[in-house]
Image (cartoon, rainbow, N blue to C red; front, side, top):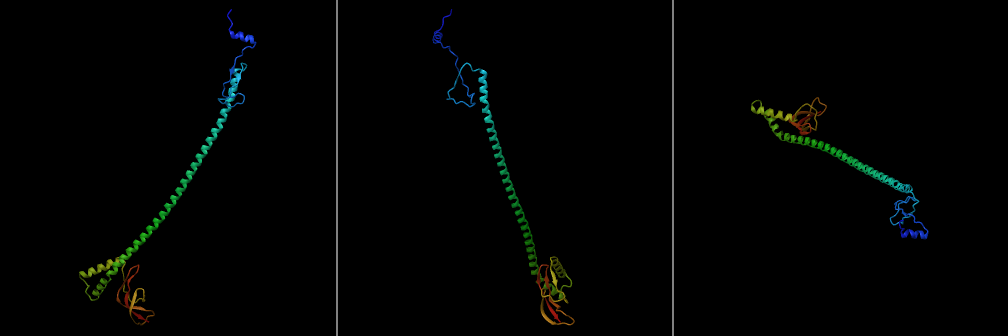
Length: 232
């Protein structure tokens, strides 16, 4: 027969049989379902606890942990999406406002440019008319000399008569009009009365004779005609 160890004899002497000791090292409390802290004392379980019960308790304790985390993550994701959507809407509104301001600036610049072009064209036309009238006014004494030479019979023919005719044609093409009509009603805007004398068979002041021709353009009178006026 094999010899008995001393411990067995000691337990037999005391009358208390030795039971296996099982320590519960699970991180989730199977009773409360909470997570155990590292410094929390671990209860000792006897050999009566079955492995199936232990596994069921561990599964029951682990399940609430994942259920608690899932709604928190979904809430954070929703807040991030809303914040991003608000930021995009704010940026879009800013872009629209900037585009509207640029459109208004463009329309204002376009209107200013159109007005500028009209003003430049008008000023250019006025400047051209003033320049033409200045040239025509400077040539009026030459036209007076041509009229005097023609009245004395010096421009009946020859090269000078041709030159005088060409000059008068050029000036007429630039809008110069001669004021030398007789038998018309006296108009103080285009006539300058040097002499007045009674006339027969007239009811209004009438130009009887032109002493010096006048000239005008469509824009203004360059020089009134000097005339003799017959009055009723």
